[in-house]
Length: 365
Ligand code: F6R
Picture 1 (tube, protein in one colour):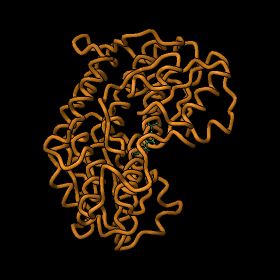
Picture 2: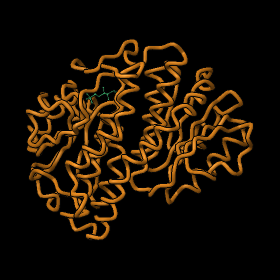
Picture 3: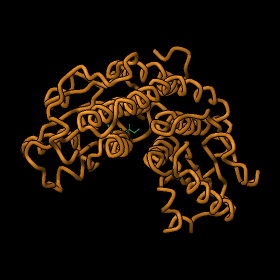
């Protein structure tokens, strides 16, 4: 049932404050300001020196975001792998290490093959999974449900942010077990996570503004997405969403890579979407933004008020979000990124729930 929405995708985007709040509530003790996992981990996080994360598509992007969190909060080295590469690259894995698989459906063929490979190498395995009866949930050592509810739109939206909610909670749990964060830091970060659903609800109120920007975007042939830190995987995710739904060619880049090639593409016809959440390296992203503006590129800025101050009005459109702490801002900034792809597809008359050539669950390789 789509309720009052035109598409399941719109409904699922708007469900995020609620389902992310529920997912967080399952893994965090809000009143104590602590992570409270309702299960024992298959390994002691203090006894491993590396974490491998594996998935496809949007689930892989969630893994890329989580890498920053595990490294920062738990001080553990993280490798994020595409399941389709991992399974054939046959990477060395130490027995008793940990591989974490992320999959909405839990049926993606490359993920299951990678799971079986990791198990055969003696790895402990975890599955961050939505469908709790899936093959991944059954075959991994520990299934961690993301509790997003049934996702019908082919493009993953609420599963992505619920994956992030679970991965953030796990990163904090690892941080505590590895004594990489203090109780005070844990309490602060749990507080920041608790604020995410409310901030997502505020971001959803920008829906009609995003729709206006989507009208501009629908005329583009190519779109560049830029971001740094956790906003870099979000740039990749934005480009993936736009191309799969609107069939406009889009690419995501780490903002610092701009001058290593893609800057050659920039002219007056090229929209460049800069995802610029609060971050210790925001100034660096702002200078990348100025490089785009100087070449006449059409900037679309997603960030806090004041971000676009020095950029001429002719070259920019801005989507201003509320101030927030930097650590989990990527979860909130996922909302305008999803809305932009959705509205662009709808403006162009494409079927946002069922893009051509795509299946919800990729059970063949
Ligand atoms: C993109 C999208 C896909 C899936 C990918 C993995 O919007 O939905 O990229 O994320 O096919 O699917 P799961 O998570 O079911 O393994």
